[in-house]
Image 1 (tube, rainbow, N blue to C red):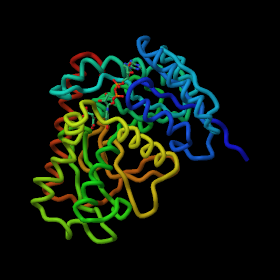
Image 2: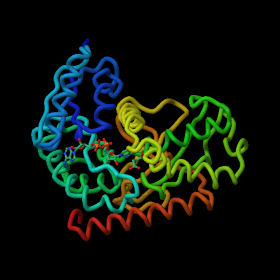
Image 3: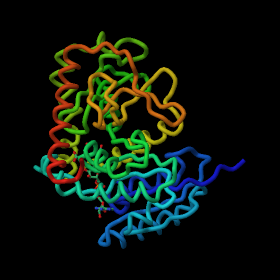
Image 4: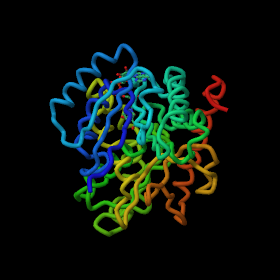
Length: 330
Ligand SMILES: NC(=O)C1=CN([C@@H]2O[C@H](COP(=O)(O)OP(=O)(O)OC[C@H]3O[C@@H](n4cnc5c(N)ncnc54)[C@H](O)[C@@H]3O)[C@@H](O)[C@H]2O)C=CC1
Ligand SMILES: O=C([O-])CC(=O)C(=O)O
């Protein structure tokens, strides 16, 4: 039997990530190749014309699963009946700009969008925040949607996770498909802690295949600073890889993570996992089952990992304090 169409809302639809994302959603990569999709695109007024152009191209692609494309500059309309919200629209970091500079510029966007989700989205709404600073923006949206279960708000750590897998595959001369159980703790920022403690390469512990010096001096900083390296090289921030990671995150959330593996989403901390305080949206090793993320329990945490987790807790709390001071959260 044909499945019912699902409404997917993409904010910042006319931007670089939007352009790389929408065609894959319409092709069935986001939810499954048997799930029809209704796309709602949200833009600011200056972005509407470009969004119309993208919508024309989406229609010209004649995707069998694409039921409709609608364009809005009103979040209340764009999230009406939405089951998946991809919150991409934000001001991108430009050369030389630090993440903290983005707080004020972007903080104001995610409160009203959270409220619109609260008031108009479907009951099964699942939100992925991509726009930076993603973890903090996700908390802002979540706090403005008190009627939506908190665990429906997530932030994108999947790009960091994918970057970490790619680096380990290259170092060990293996394929990305051979690598399992990668973890990136914390925030989508230079503070993040990419962690190979439980990663395996073709079933062998990654820690037996690479030395500590490579991990500490190359792997961790390369993954954590990859966003800046892409900006330096491309003159623009990661777009196609970010879109691809967003697809991976939502696909796994809805369809489940593969047996014997886990991934890294930025998810709501209820205070019961690895000492991360309640209220943060934080990168954890997690599996998805039945449409819910579940943190992988019982991992033995090394001293280095603990330092990384603690650094991220501190940075996340400082960032939330800054947006609290701006009156954007409680
Ligand atoms: N979490 C992650 O792993 C990553 C996050 N990013 C972030 O994603 C965001 C988007 O990046 P790009 O697409 O490259 O930027 P872009 O500048 O190309 O596109 C952003 C779009 O958002 C729109 N926009 C701005 N405010 C809006 C609002 N209130 N409602 C709806 N649309 C709005 C703009 O008009 C623009 O079309 C940036 O914050 C960037 O830093 C980028 C890469 C990775
Ligand atoms: O660094 C940036 O501004 C873009 C980004 O989030 C990334 O590529 O990881």
